[in-house]
Length: 130
Image 1 (tube, rainbow, N blue to C red):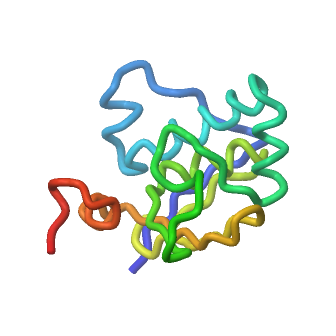
Image 2 (cartoon, rainbow, N blue to C red):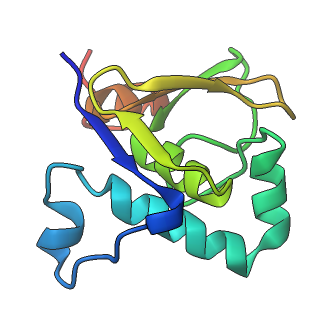
Image 3 (cartoon, rainbow, N blue to C red):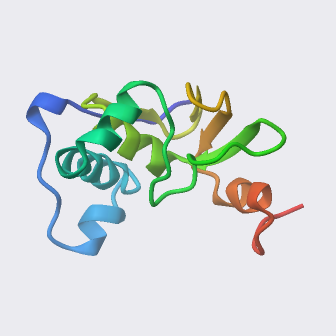
């Protein structure tokens, strides 16, 4: 079973007014993150250009940045949504299946997931499950 969140770049919706509208809906806040990526592309054309080249730059969400020694990393779906916005792409993310992208700069593969415990575990943070 999949749950795909999609939005068209050419007819991007406006953000909700309240926190619950932005983050508590069925899209889990991915639309809000994607819209922020679109805004960020206007603020930082160089960052947008890096994303357009397939790089996974550091963003507020876990997922990009420096390569880790194992060559593989776990990232948040919110990162992927913001990255798609930076690139000027339509939002298209499967909440269940996630996605994997490889950074063209570092060669690091990132498995994007909505499973917060997997992200914590990969980062060695408290709250991750063994």
